[in-house]
Image 1: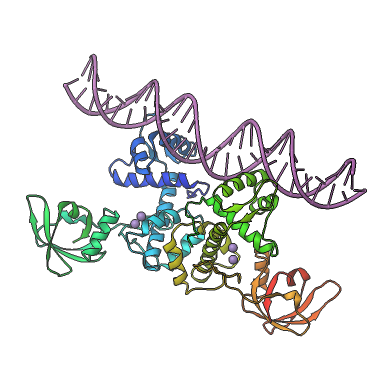
Image 2 (image 1 turned 120 degrees about the horizontal axis):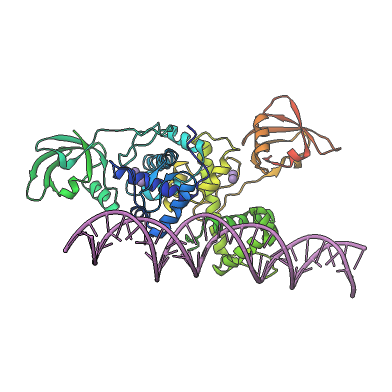
Length: 226
Length: 226
DNA sequence: TATAAAAGTTAGACTAGTCTAACAAATATA
DNA sequence: TATATTTGTTAGACTAGTCTAACTTTTATA
Ligand SMILES: [Mn+2]
Ligand SMILES: [Mn+2]
Ligand SMILES: [Mn+2]
Ligand SMILES: [Mn+2]
């Protein structure tokens, strides 16, 4: 179980995390393509190809010319370790330093690269072993396990169904700030009053307040639990 | 007062902090030499020369070929900002995450480079505006002011004088762990029982316990207040 | 003051990470 | 299946930061 390799550069860590995130997105086939990866990281495909060769050399990915990219078990565990740090730091910023949920990501992008096993574990303890980050995303455990939670999109609910918000699918600042304006956060109860077939929009009741209309795009960006 | 330049690289920040620390060491003339600086940073003199040219270009230091190096006001304020972050993070690790005082430095070396004005200020607030770090070193304020404290070396005390530990001069792991073994920390009261002229060693009483002998090197590594 | 030693600089090379431009392979489509 | 489009690779160049080896300037010392 000696998966975590500490001799990774800041940049290599970012590539591994990106590949892990892409593997979550492409649920069925957890592979990625060069262009997809480059786009995700904001670099050119040529750059991604170069890095891929290096990651392959270190046995963090399997890949051959013109083929798909797949994390090895070591690569995956290293990616998970970064994700764990990212989400623990987001939780710290949110819970302890009063950052809002649209501000935490940018700073956590930096903090996730701090190298100190003790720091991560102590931080987790200090935060009381949180299972989910401020956006409702699961925080990997020290052993690499990732907590799961039943969640469906708000758009999947039928009329008159009641639910609670468990996570955001879209973590963009503009969406998070909109949610804040609507006084929706993790845990907020929502009732679907009406579904408008015409455009997929919904009429919803937030925390027992008066009815409100939200778009299909909105309903497809919020994870809830019945 | 727009001193803090945020477009500094990790490396540039380290050079500025090093120059600031050297300026504290060379109290009278706050200048540094190329070799001195290189040694402090663990790089070769040639490397330091190259960086110096870059820092000069950015008006963070004044310096001419074969001359001494001096921080400009902007360079100094930027260095102070890094030092502030370093010491606040050390305090966080020590106070909140139960790190010991010989463990905090290494991690703070990484954390001091995190870029977020909000983070620093919130952290400071979270820690209740501490004035000194776990080693007794002053934490610069947001405006760049550095708290001062009366302190002398333990070696300067006369026989029968009583004092309290306020800071360590030597922050090496081996010294800090020795202090821990002796149950000496910031605030511990010490009484000088006897001075041995032969080798400058002292017989001291730590927190009212039985007498103990310590070397001159030891007595010159601990700051105290009468 | 002449010379030796110390301090500092320059030139040239290397690595990591990035880019652009040109090219090659794989896939979609007519 | 032939061709166009998409996807991915290669070659060559650039920057930041580092090094070694050779050189120059300053300072100390005989
Ligand atoms: Mn995030
Ligand atoms: Mn998150
Ligand atoms: Mn320190
Ligand atoms: Mn300190």
